[in-house]
Length: 41
Image 1 (tube, rainbow, N blue to C red):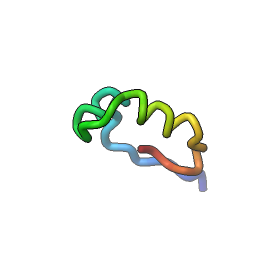
Image 2: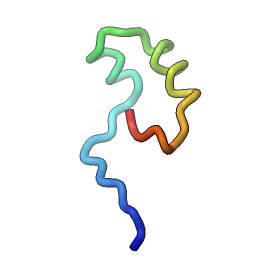
Image 3: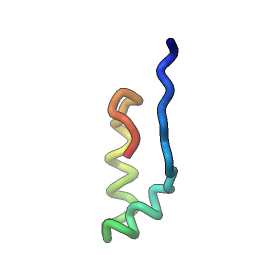
Image 4: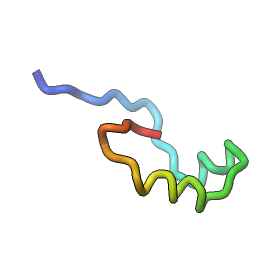
């Protein structure tokens, strides 16, 4: 059986950065090194 991801909400990096009170550039740099196996942020 094929594994299916069950994402209930998708947010932009800008939205997440605003909610965490961090710079968008910081989150963008962190996500560049992520692999699909790391899961969604």
